[in-house]
Length: 357
Image 1 (cartoon, rainbow, N blue to C red):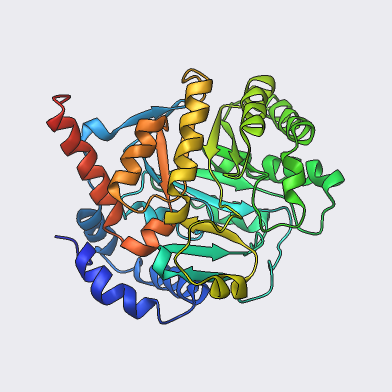
Image 2: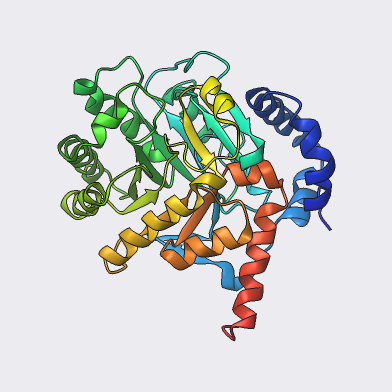
């Protein structure tokens, strides 16, 4: 039994945590984890409680071996502070960032909001992070086996016509310290960043990075993170970009700027203002995009599925739609630390029921 099982978390822990602002909870949790993980035997104890290991869960993806298909999405561990600790909660990979060349504070607070009725979050953090040098310092301390991805972006103040320099600089700095790299051109919380999703800009940036990769002794996977708000025509462009630039995969999807089919009162949503919406309202949208890319590419494009994984069934649907791996974030916040174990255990049970084991 988990120390904070699903019911205990939902009925007792979560209501207490949700009395505080989301960003306050985030900082307290990171500080708590960094402090308590220095206690003897605690990391091993948490691994026993929250990890679920089984040979059938292993995944080969882009030359890497993952213990299971569940990872923590970018946005939580922005500065590579707790990537190894979160491996103890059952994740097989952690994506740090988004990391930018220089430190930046992000957008004014408050900038993260819960829509509890919709099991969702709205955030407009704005790539707040301590910069790539700080991330590299933290990554140099890697000891465990958890796979780490580096999600990179541009500084807010960098004009789009110079964005390629920011991506080049951050990619070059962090390359030797992560296992794969993610190019984030789709975050809705950076002014005019969506302009870089234009086919011409995307190809130019990705070609620059693949050229830079060729100068390295070890070739590491490069993935493009895309928006859930792309049209079919834009998705077709993303598929063409994959083949044109010879990157290695796509992460589908980022947060959405739409506010469709919410049960939270409209005036409350409007009072929150702009930002990327994550959680349950994104579930079907991101799954449709995964399925579209998988089918249109005849399964040739490696996909990491993320967006609205709030239940075990959501996770299974994304894998069935064509994702090889999945990432959670908002679902972890709403379901608690036992969520990853529940997903992995169910995957094994379904394999047994289907006669695959």
